Image (cartoon, rainbow, N blue to C red; front, side):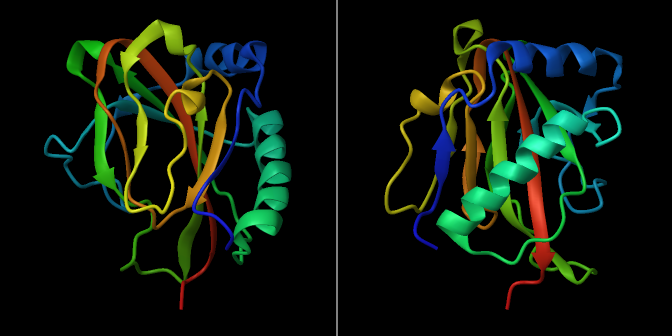
Length: 187
Protein backbone atom coordinates (compact mmCIF):
# COMPACT_ATOMS: atom_id res chain seq x y z
CA UNK A 1 0.00 0.00 0.00
CA UNK A 2 1.58 3.30 -1.03
CA UNK A 3 -1.19 5.62 0.12
CA UNK A 4 -4.24 5.86 2.33
CA UNK A 5 -6.47 7.26 -0.42
CA UNK A 6 -6.43 8.35 -4.02
CA UNK A 7 -8.95 10.35 -6.00
CA UNK A 8 -9.83 11.36 -9.53
CA UNK A 9 -11.35 14.82 -9.75
CA UNK A 10 -14.47 14.98 -11.96
CA UNK A 11 -13.87 11.46 -13.30
CA UNK A 12 -17.58 11.11 -14.11
CA UNK A 13 -18.89 13.96 -16.26
CA UNK A 14 -21.81 16.10 -15.05
CA UNK A 15 -23.98 14.39 -17.70
CA UNK A 16 -23.01 10.95 -16.39
CA UNK A 17 -23.81 12.00 -12.82
CA UNK A 18 -27.18 13.41 -13.86
CA UNK A 19 -27.93 10.23 -15.84
CA UNK A 20 -27.30 8.10 -12.75
CA UNK A 21 -29.62 10.30 -10.68
CA UNK A 22 -32.30 10.31 -13.39
CA UNK A 23 -32.23 6.51 -13.72
CA UNK A 24 -32.50 6.24 -9.92
CA UNK A 25 -35.79 8.13 -9.72
CA UNK A 26 -37.77 4.90 -10.07
CA UNK A 27 -35.90 3.22 -7.19
CA UNK A 28 -37.26 3.12 -3.65
CA UNK A 29 -35.22 4.99 -1.04
CA UNK A 30 -35.30 3.91 2.60
CA UNK A 31 -33.91 5.23 5.85
CA UNK A 32 -30.27 4.20 6.17
CA UNK A 33 -29.40 1.60 8.78
CA UNK A 34 -26.15 0.42 10.33
CA UNK A 35 -24.54 -2.97 10.42
CA UNK A 36 -23.90 -5.90 8.17
CA UNK A 37 -27.44 -7.23 8.30
CA UNK A 38 -28.95 -3.75 7.79
CA UNK A 39 -31.22 -4.19 10.79
CA UNK A 40 -29.40 -2.09 13.36
CA UNK A 41 -31.17 1.12 14.27
CA UNK A 42 -28.91 4.05 13.57
CA UNK A 43 -29.60 5.97 16.82
CA UNK A 44 -28.69 9.31 15.24
CA UNK A 45 -25.34 8.06 13.94
CA UNK A 46 -26.54 8.19 10.36
CA UNK A 47 -29.21 10.44 8.88
CA UNK A 48 -29.67 9.67 5.22
CA UNK A 49 -31.84 7.80 2.78
CA UNK A 50 -30.39 5.08 0.59
CA UNK A 51 -31.21 2.79 -2.29
CA UNK A 52 -29.24 0.07 -4.03
CA UNK A 53 -28.17 -0.04 -7.63
CA UNK A 54 -27.32 -3.34 -9.29
CA UNK A 55 -25.48 -4.33 -12.47
CA UNK A 56 -28.66 -5.10 -14.42
CA UNK A 57 -29.83 -1.44 -14.37
CA UNK A 58 -26.44 0.27 -14.14
CA UNK A 59 -23.95 -1.85 -16.12
CA UNK A 60 -22.01 1.25 -17.17
CA UNK A 61 -21.36 2.29 -13.57
CA UNK A 62 -20.22 -1.19 -12.56
CA UNK A 63 -17.98 -1.53 -15.59
CA UNK A 64 -16.38 1.88 -14.98
CA UNK A 65 -15.77 1.18 -11.28
CA UNK A 66 -14.30 -2.29 -11.92
CA UNK A 67 -11.89 -0.91 -14.51
CA UNK A 68 -10.85 1.95 -12.26
CA UNK A 69 -10.52 -0.34 -9.22
CA UNK A 70 -8.17 -2.68 -11.10
CA UNK A 71 -5.84 0.20 -11.93
CA UNK A 72 -6.08 1.87 -8.50
CA UNK A 73 -5.63 -1.37 -6.58
CA UNK A 74 -2.59 -2.32 -8.68
CA UNK A 75 -0.95 1.11 -8.34
CA UNK A 76 -1.91 2.06 -4.78
CA UNK A 77 -3.24 -0.65 -2.50
CA UNK A 78 -2.42 -4.22 -3.59
CA UNK A 79 -5.39 -5.83 -1.84
CA UNK A 80 -6.82 -9.25 -2.73
CA UNK A 81 -10.18 -8.21 -4.24
CA UNK A 82 -12.61 -10.40 -6.14
CA UNK A 83 -16.12 -9.04 -5.64
CA UNK A 84 -18.33 -5.97 -5.99
CA UNK A 85 -21.83 -7.01 -4.97
CA UNK A 86 -23.76 -3.75 -5.08
CA UNK A 87 -23.50 0.02 -5.01
CA UNK A 88 -25.38 2.26 -2.60
CA UNK A 89 -26.88 5.60 -3.61
CA UNK A 90 -27.18 7.91 -0.60
CA UNK A 91 -29.19 11.10 -0.21
CA UNK A 92 -28.09 13.55 2.51
CA UNK A 93 -30.76 16.21 2.97
CA UNK A 94 -30.09 19.60 4.55
CA UNK A 95 -33.63 19.70 6.02
CA UNK A 96 -32.61 16.98 8.49
CA UNK A 97 -28.88 17.79 8.58
CA UNK A 98 -28.13 14.52 6.82
CA UNK A 99 -24.84 12.99 7.91
CA UNK A 100 -22.95 9.78 8.61
CA UNK A 101 -20.77 10.12 11.70
CA UNK A 102 -17.27 8.65 12.05
CA UNK A 103 -17.18 5.00 11.01
CA UNK A 104 -15.30 2.26 9.17
CA UNK A 105 -16.78 0.27 6.28
CA UNK A 106 -15.33 -3.13 7.16
CA UNK A 107 -17.30 -5.44 9.46
CA UNK A 108 -14.49 -7.04 11.46
CA UNK A 109 -16.69 -9.64 13.12
CA UNK A 110 -18.93 -11.25 10.55
CA UNK A 111 -20.28 -14.67 9.71
CA UNK A 112 -18.83 -14.87 6.22
CA UNK A 113 -15.36 -15.54 4.89
CA UNK A 114 -15.25 -12.07 3.28
CA UNK A 115 -14.33 -8.52 4.27
CA UNK A 116 -14.82 -5.19 2.64
CA UNK A 117 -11.34 -4.11 1.62
CA UNK A 118 -11.52 -1.09 -0.65
CA UNK A 119 -14.20 1.59 -0.38
CA UNK A 120 -15.07 4.08 -3.08
CA UNK A 121 -17.25 7.20 -2.94
CA UNK A 122 -18.48 9.00 -6.05
CA UNK A 123 -19.73 12.57 -5.66
CA UNK A 124 -22.89 12.89 -7.80
CA UNK A 125 -24.13 16.35 -6.77
CA UNK A 126 -22.82 19.65 -8.03
CA UNK A 127 -21.07 21.08 -4.96
CA UNK A 128 -22.83 24.43 -5.46
CA UNK A 129 -26.20 22.74 -4.76
CA UNK A 130 -25.58 22.10 -1.06
CA UNK A 131 -23.64 23.41 1.95
CA UNK A 132 -21.67 21.24 4.37
CA UNK A 133 -21.58 17.52 3.67
CA UNK A 134 -17.80 17.22 3.32
CA UNK A 135 -16.27 13.77 3.25
CA UNK A 136 -13.71 13.75 6.06
CA UNK A 137 -11.02 11.21 6.96
CA UNK A 138 -9.37 10.43 10.32
CA UNK A 139 -6.01 9.00 11.34
CA UNK A 140 -4.31 9.40 7.97
CA UNK A 141 -0.76 10.60 7.46
CA UNK A 142 -2.09 13.11 4.86
CA UNK A 143 -5.57 14.18 3.85
CA UNK A 144 -7.25 14.89 0.52
CA UNK A 145 -8.27 18.49 -0.13
CA UNK A 146 -11.91 18.66 0.99
CA UNK A 147 -12.80 21.20 -1.69
CA UNK A 148 -11.23 19.10 -4.46
CA UNK A 149 -13.19 15.97 -3.58
CA UNK A 150 -16.48 17.93 -3.47
CA UNK A 151 -16.43 18.37 -7.26
CA UNK A 152 -19.19 16.60 -9.11
CA UNK A 153 -18.07 13.28 -10.55
CA UNK A 154 -15.03 12.94 -8.29
CA UNK A 155 -14.16 9.37 -7.31
CA UNK A 156 -12.16 8.63 -4.16
CA UNK A 157 -10.81 5.21 -3.12
CA UNK A 158 -9.59 4.31 0.38
CA UNK A 159 -9.09 1.17 2.48
CA UNK A 160 -12.34 0.16 4.15
CA UNK A 161 -10.65 0.20 7.58
CA UNK A 162 -9.95 3.98 7.37
CA UNK A 163 -12.23 6.00 9.66
CA UNK A 164 -14.26 8.60 7.75
CA UNK A 165 -17.52 10.53 7.92
CA UNK A 166 -19.95 12.60 5.89
CA UNK A 167 -20.33 15.93 7.70
CA UNK A 168 -23.88 17.27 8.18
CA UNK A 169 -25.45 18.86 5.11
CA UNK A 170 -26.59 22.32 6.20
CA UNK A 171 -28.74 23.16 3.16
CA UNK A 172 -29.61 21.56 -0.15
CA UNK A 173 -29.11 17.88 -0.92
CA UNK A 174 -25.96 15.86 -1.49
CA UNK A 175 -26.10 12.63 -3.49
CA UNK A 176 -23.24 10.15 -3.57
CA UNK A 177 -22.53 6.57 -4.53
CA UNK A 178 -20.61 4.24 -2.25
CA UNK A 179 -19.30 0.81 -3.13
CA UNK A 180 -17.19 -1.76 -1.35
CA UNK A 181 -14.82 -4.11 -3.10
CA UNK A 182 -14.49 -7.34 -1.16
CA UNK A 183 -12.02 -10.16 -0.78
CA UNK A 184 -11.02 -12.94 1.61
CA UNK A 185 -10.95 -11.89 5.27
CA UNK A 186 -8.03 -9.76 6.42
CA UNK A 187 -5.35 -11.78 8.21
